[in-house]
Length: 247
Length: 67
Image (tube, rainbow over all chains, first blue to last red; front, side, top):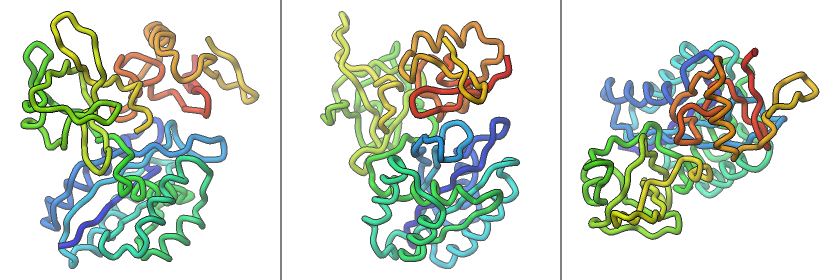
């Protein structure tokens, strides 16, 4: 088995399904075909700049999977055809598939991802780095500009400190409250963590807002919480989305 | 609330963290259409910041709805 990261970018327009839905379908199809096991999809925010073409937000979607090496090329072929078939009119889809144990310079990949949040990168830069590192990178329609975000998304997921999990956590609560231990038992999260980096113990009680999001921090998936002054003695609540922008 | 840019597009004048104003604006907008949940940036669903028809800029967003 080999561990891979698959990232897609620039597949949508204002009327179409989001890139996250396509990433989810790819991850599910991989399992349906018996090629391996896939994990959660993460969303990675890239630079918003007048010189960067994007639909409305410029984000890419990435997932990790364990597959048998014999299914690597079939997966790449399928994903490329899938993007050509399912991407929206006017989009510029890109696909990146990275075999982690074959990656020559992981730090270069992470650096590219971080750069894509700060400066304008172009397709040639992305293709040059992908060729140097032995990473699959391909375009599947339009200008193919999505290769930049696809490569960057893999780098950001590898960093372990960027991105929000697609979807939200379904947590059963007692009147909107749940202990950390109960939250962890109902999810695949690594922990519940404050914005200051403190990982909370299992007995702490959290006020859970609607549709709570998990983020990727220090290589793990965490539900972020913020302090709250509450007469009921509840000390923590899930961090509002508007404070999760840095992820 | 809005100002027109050089291309005649409507730019939100209050930046990316005027959460109350963006929610109030969306409540009165007939074109509001929520973006996919993964692109929401505020817990209050009905907000211009969560609208499919907003296009983020460096400092704020453009409203792409034809009013």
